[in-house]
Length: 83
Image (cartoon, rainbow, N blue to C red; front, side, top):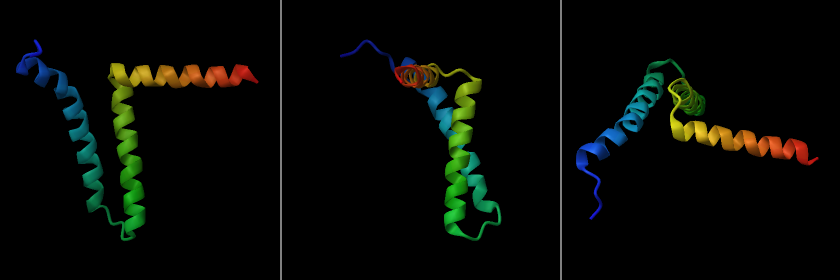
């Protein structure tokens, strides 16, 4: 078996679980805003989820998120200078 104790696994998962909980709370709270159109509510929830998740990842410099941002920047720079 792997030498990866349960306590360490939980410690590694906690930031992701906390982030998902915060985002979920923000998205769920939109249910109580008086948006009668279901499509508009769904759109607002999706946008809110994206903004909260990426915002918190950026503020706390989550390593996997920052790595993805750097990869995107690198690809965009390569596209820019390829022309």
